[in-house]
Image (tube, rainbow, N blue to C red; front, top):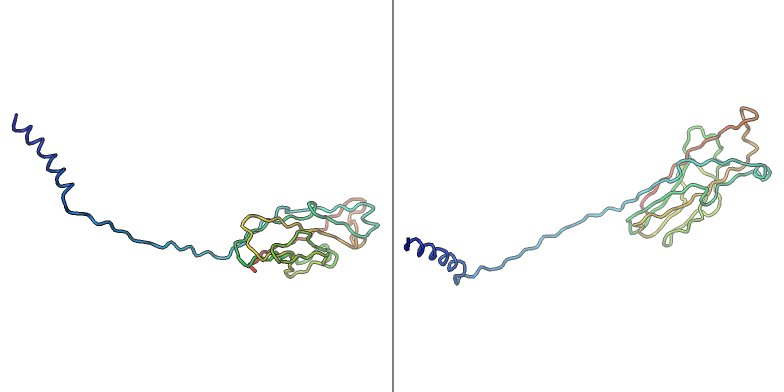
Length: 178
């Protein structure tokens, strides 16, 4: 028994001696690059999928009805492009019910950076038209409000007589990297 105790005590001492021997372990290091190849990206979200303009007598007397500011169409965009982005709008309906010359748009939302805005009412077309632009990144969403005007109200009759006739056009928004 005495012998097994001595052996049991010697084994840990030998292991300890091996772990602290005079041989030094050299530290090594290396590097690895992590590369993110970021593409210029844009995102768009149309917040108002539909708006209804209901002209009253004053609108008929003026010949036009408007949806301005918060009553218009809100679109949110963001981009990581260092050169910014352009928000465009068009009405490419095959047979629009509101004549394109009578359907006008503009925005009073300030441009980003040294971008631009369509600040005066302009007739919509079937081709993309610039509504708003930014020349800088916009990592958080920016909301752009589109004001809408329909003019020449007397050209749009109530087909049912004594009721309401809905004339509908679809606007398409596009955002592109500038």
